[in-house]
Amino acid sequence: MNRTGWSVQEIPDLGGRTAVVTGANSGLGYVTARELARRGARVVLGCRSRARGRAAVERLTGEVPKADVELGELDLGDLASVRRFASEFAHDRLDLLVNNAGVMAPPYGTTADGFETQFGVNHLGHFALTALLLPRLTATPGARVVTVSSMMHVLANVDLHDLNSERHYRRWTAYARSKTANLLFTHELARRLAAAGADVVAAAAHPGYAATNLQTAGPRAEGRRTAERLMELANRALAQPAEAGALPTLYAATAHGVRPDSFTGPSLAMWRGTPAPSWRAPWTLNDTAGERLWTASEELTGAAYDALKA
Image (tube, rainbow, N blue to C red):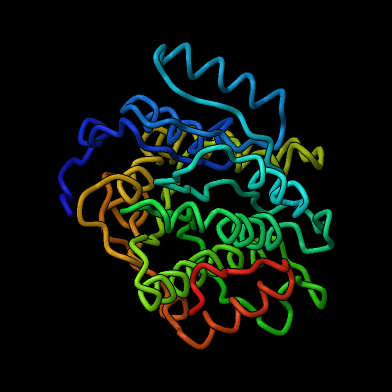
């Protein structure tokens, strides 16, 4: 991988290809969707809010007038919404699924299905969505699934005995566990795709420290103005812009030779810079943990990966 300056100009022509990007109304998801559309892909923006999604479509088509984009309502914290989005997906092929949406360090809460919010949205919602869209992916030669994790996964392994943090909840630990779950999911998905002989690459990426509304959403929702202000200042002083933070995802999604179960991030200390292979915690490559998390996720979501079964 080129460590000296891979940029969006190196994204190949994506004409005739179809992509789904979750959380595409702002931040990294918006930039990812915009740059895929700029290179000719038909992009479905998976957004929880119809109003914010419509605003994103309007903004995107203003920046890329010939963009082929459409809005799909998708609340990853509600499995009924995930199933509805997949059932309404009207395209025969799916070349790229970018599992980007997420929440970070909110107070304890639960999804519509009773899962701890971060585990439910960041991992289980995407696990179910990927299962439901997998038949389209496996039917499309050279398809990819890119799941966005975080460098903060290094702070905690998943607790397979307390996936929903019912015994004890610490917001940053729960966030780190959900991001570890993203990497274990990618690891196990890549293994199962290879075993099934599927022409689909499952890879992961992370943005380093990128300035988005993800950092400020939690404090703002709780009315913690001081914490929100500190996050805003840190974003200005330390973070790279969303345009740079999205580069690892775009690389994993479009670059030639991306390997299954690879993890792409910023080149400089996992913090900022151009895309490069990123270090990951050893526990994210544990086959046993990956299998156990997969089994638990199937049971919790009811998602069936029939396309990978013999």
